[in-house]
Amino acid sequence: MKRMDLKSPEIKNDLAVRLRRIEGQVRGVQRMLDEDRECPDVLQQLAAIRSAVHQTSLVLARAYAARCLQEPTRGDPEAMLDKLIATLGKLE
Image 1 (tube, rainbow, N blue to C red):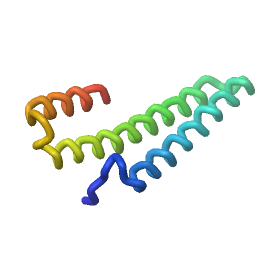
Image 2 (cartoon, one colour; image 1 turned 30 degrees about the vertical axis):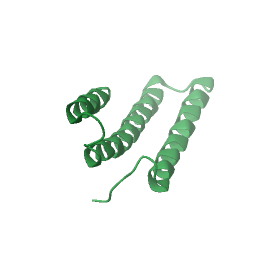
Image 3 (tube, rainbow, N blue to C red; image 1 turned 30 degrees about the horizontal axis):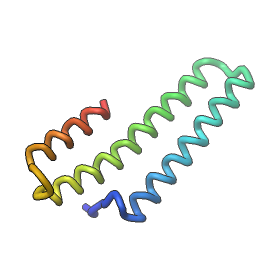
């Protein structure tokens, strides 16, 4: 698997593309509400947005975890592991 660095142009581009897509989805939901679309249609789009945000979070979390694991000597390894676990716990 390819190494992903938080500072790499590849990860930044991937996140930017995902966030622009999410932004478009949110604007679409706003239009749906303005047009008085049916609730199930709006809810389906909101579920898609939630999924897209979650997937974007996973991309960023993977890059962060990879960096933490590649630099275990920076400071206290136990503290770094605790911080990593706490950060990943926020994805739930």
